[in-house]
Amino acid sequence: MINHALMQAAQEKEELQREGDDLDAKIRKAEKEIRALENTVRLMNSRNETYRKSFNKVADTSEFKDCYLIENTFFNKFLKVSKTFDAGLRSLTFVGFPEKILAFVHR
Image 1 (cartoon, one colour):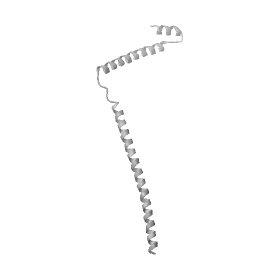
Image 2: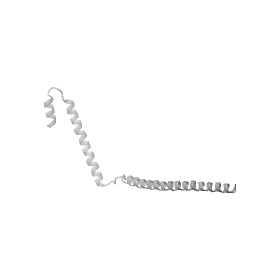
Image 3: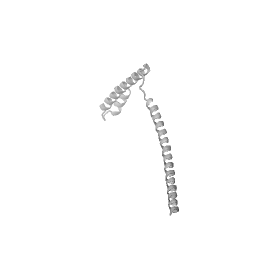
Image 4: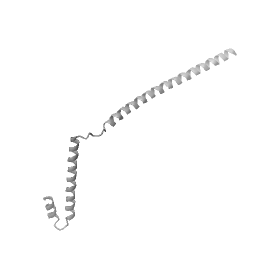
């Protein structure tokens, strides 16, 4: 009877030891995954910060002002030419159509 109880206790101890070892292995694996995820988050944060910094506001330099003025002038001239072109197209009729196109284009 005592031998049976001792054997049963030894078996329970061995089973508990195996379960403890399994849990310990799972904990080590989870800790390793957590470290990998933390590294990934650090890397992503670093790259996001670098990306964010690439969008800093443009300095208000004379070069920037010159570029803005050139672009604005170009846009205004483009609008003027487009309006003139649209007006010319609207004035065309089927009678004398080729002559009006040639006259409009060769202005």
